[in-house]
Image 1: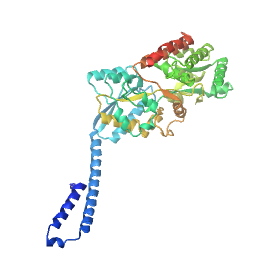
Image 2: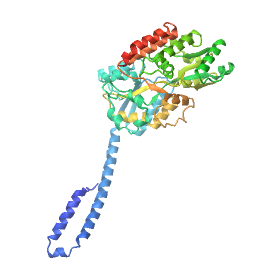
Image 3: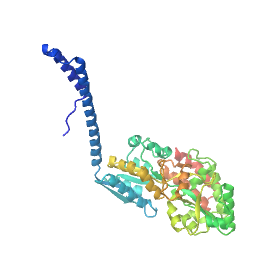
Image 4: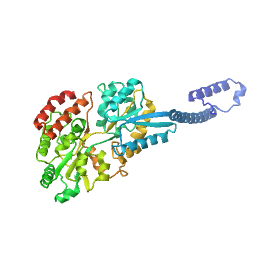
Length: 444
């Protein structure tokens, strides 16, 4: 049983009262020790009691922390869209769940897989039905709608109090805000396209790895002349097309802050010429064919993402590497899922999972081992495959795609026009004009 300690002010008051009583005690008082000795004794007593009070306060704080931890019990529900087609990340969900359960033995983390295309609608339907989820890991462009519908919660206060917030790219966090300024999510790790090179084919053609745009185009021409295809990449309509067109445009100097920058037209004209010359796969506009094209061995380069790394590591029948080419392909748009908390979530426990697992250095290393790019500064990548390194370097030249109520329309506008150029259905100038006419209004 803990005994009560008197506050410092009460101790001082009792000491003063004792001195007054002693002074009023007549002859008996003359036999008492001098006042300075009383003061010293009182000070010693005060010091002892202060130390006891500090000990009690520390005990109380520890008890409060233990109580807070013990409050985390029951089931934490985490919804995500990492299916088996995204190598590693579905398994990473199990690792992250186990990490949290080890921290809080009274908690069971229940992960629920959702299809990519219907995920936002599922969350909205769950909100209407009164079902609760604690954490959602979902494509960032879905969050404005989910926040406006009341499906996810603002986390301004939580992020402001998070001590490691400055270890994550500020521009990535800044786009995760609603029109009212509320922050509705964060991001732990990202995805980005890179340029893969078939080294066996490069050697056959007698070429070195290109380091400039001029050398890259010379390699494309040489591949075509030898009966191969120079480059393949995702050129389909919609969001996938947008995500894969942006590295080419951004590397030429285009940005969302300057939506009518002629660098966009220059990029589209270049892509049109590559297809016309036979340097780029004409079937790129039909879907996710880039990986299969490259693994077949008859394409010199592939624009493809880190999410396909394990596919190349396991299945490529030739030597390959990853490169960046300054002023052609050295950055891009940062993709990957954002992390949100359900509006009806177990808020404190949900945030603990986000910060103590997903955003933690250990959790980030799990992401790296699953071949996703950690966004936290200082994460050790030595446990991940060395091929992830170039993708991590690309993050420095990349930007986060701005989010708004018009995000879906922006993706459609950019992706569709890019795809039509690759397919030969629209010329590059017409595509650029269409983008310049509509995009500024959508970004307002």
